[in-house]
Image (cartoon, rainbow, N blue to C red; front, side, top):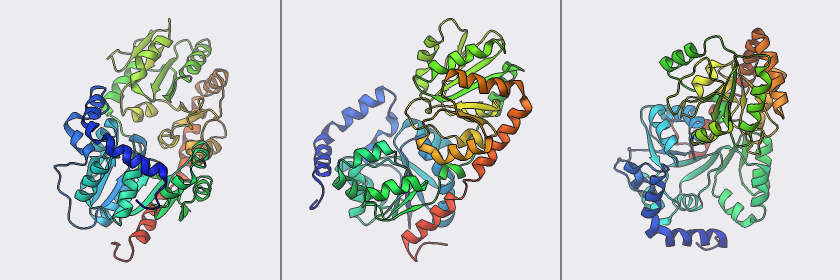
Length: 425
């Protein structure tokens, strides 16, 4: 490990010291629903699956969002390379991958970032190239893969100004980690500039993979059932909300109820375990929780959609929505998911995670920026009062999203260059 920054060496030694306690850690996480008991061996670098013959392309995404973004790329690489291994770190992403991975792709949990677990993983799978999606950087995994000659790329790459500022306090660590990548493929030029300033050697801008992602799926029978329960009631949808945003949506709901007494507000929290918490925030408003099996009745004012993998259903129900993570300093969640389903967006000022996507969609709509309950109620009132304008806004949002496509082909082309002349055409 000569020449390795002290911080990364300390991380490696910490991983070695923690190795005997890894089973205890995994069991504790499993008790909280954070690990899948039947597959915990994968977190130790062990597997019962055979490695396919030939070249193997490995794609790692931390969670659901990164994994979804990678799906169209996975399909392209399967067609060109034949074998793709996908790793992620959360139970929800594993369930989503099991449902949506194309035939021929293999999913595994990413190993814990401990030397022995990483070594077992790399010894077994021997990837030809490793593509890390967005910003999930595990030092031991990266540096060990690099030491074994694995070609590495950071794809769909993004980094906030806050994160970049933190890394500038440890420049040697940033340079060592980012220097392990043969290429960094950034979502936009602003992100690309930050990576260059941190010492990444080969940075290019290719756009966001999320712009090429397939529309979110949905269950047609469940969609029909909930649409029937709602009937002709006006809807206000708040998707992927965080603490602090529900407290803004609920007053907006109250403001709108004066004009639309039968308004139904649907809140789909980013973290579904917050369902009971949001129900308590609703106070005297009539509430139903989807996770509890509670039905929408004519008296229901707030419907809490605290279930997994159903955003595609709710985006199809409403002609517009508020996108969460934008009224609190989270950087915003993916606005392209609703936009491609012709669901116009309202968003607060915190949009750094998908700045180009928000800009494209809001520019096409020519409205949508909000900062308060009054703003949300005002925009919602206009759209609810004029269904034709709401439909036109949804169409504009979809057109704005379409202007960003093309990142998958650029990423595949960059990978072909990375692998060299033996890469399949």
